[in-house]
Image 1: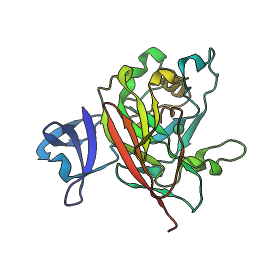
Image 2: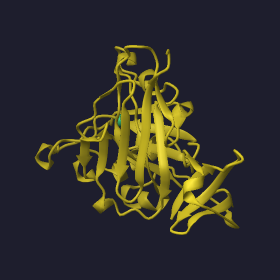
Image 3: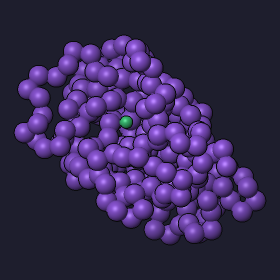
Image 4: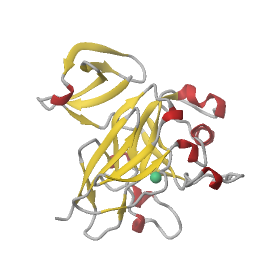
Length: 255
Ligand code: MG
């Protein structure tokens, strides 16, 4: 199923399931009890917003190689994880704002995992039982705000720096997907998740050994090679087969 959130023509926030017949409105908690209201909205008459308000956002850095022969034989004991502010989330079609004129800002198209059940110290082979579904994230990053001693939080957390959407797909076939990005219609990223260094099950098992993960937590699984810089006026489209396409325009927030 494809879970979405949207704004109707009276500007109310609503939840729904995207189907071939349009959007079937639902109410309740998508991670617990929910039900259909019976209302159907035409998909082209509503504005989608981010498909959830994450409880927290955790990213992993430097997690893809260019080809399978570049995959390391041994992976690091402590993966490079970071937190992103939840206030950085925007939805499809919203503008990514460059903080100050001239700031260096990058796009990073990523598969985002949405946790569906509380998990603590979960083994790798059970991780998928706790995953609710998947969406697309653009892990927008301004490296010049990375602290020289390492923490990435500031450069990852400006307002508008985490576009999410367009849907949370609960039945994604991970073996078939390609994580892609198109900058002004030109393809810049395209990779299967076989080129991840630390797999989804490994990274989430590891995190659950450190902190309890809960429904609504979002894990950004890293970006394929090819991520690059954005400038005002650009259009960035992150795409994953089966989830859809997440398109955002870039503006200079100081103008
Ligand atoms: Mg990233």
